[in-house]
Image (tube, rainbow, N blue to C red; front, side, top):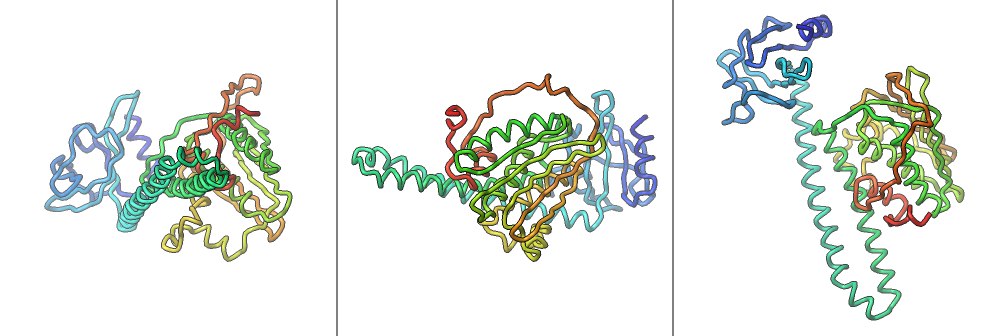
Length: 365
């Protein structure tokens, strides 16, 4: 079986403890004699009272508890020729178990905070909607201004919570990826950004130097890039704010750089931002975890994040990924008009930096 050959090569010098079984949990390969020779389905527990059911079709974390063994177990279904061939069982060490526990705790906390904040924000919108008709009848412009400014503030709250939502997705390992044209996704996103940037006098440009094809999740990609662009706008006190995105590839690496002429990042703050989850208790909605989202995106797709900055001059953030070498000539690209939804994650993130986001803005151009 090709899977067994591949596992033997991949984990030849690894300290990881693994077993590969067939679909009935018969052991076909293991790399450590300390592991159980036989795997019993009724000993694999999803909870204290629920054992696992076969077949397992999704990545699953559970416990294996028998008379001789007590492990935390990660099960990954393995496929050959699009058919389930068996299960790779990764017996987790103490560090890995602690990491999963931390992620679970953070995810639960994030989910609770997001739900509460969005419920309160939705209540404010409901109150505004109840009063809107009465205010319109008065003809008082102050009422209209109050309505608009309040809705803008609600959108700012939604934009911050959208980043909490982004982080919870990564902590839950809930990011599905497919091979996509990153260059096309970026071009469409840049059009959305430029609509608003032009209206604010924000000098925004996007230069796509290569047609890049990569393993990615478009929604998560949009959230990561939008955070970098919004940060470049918000942390810039200069009268002429500039931001440029550059996407390029040299057939070995894909580089996506967002550079600005802003205030730069103080050294102490930069050190903190590069280890955001260690400072989770200190982070509030004003932080909104934007750079964390970018770091998690890079980590999920095997990339790295580099930050160059100089006080009062510039910040340059670069995401680097391996290039799988697929290209498509520019003339074969297909475009769709950018769709802007105010309260989707990307719309919320952009709304935080650029103010109230008008769904019809693109159509007015």
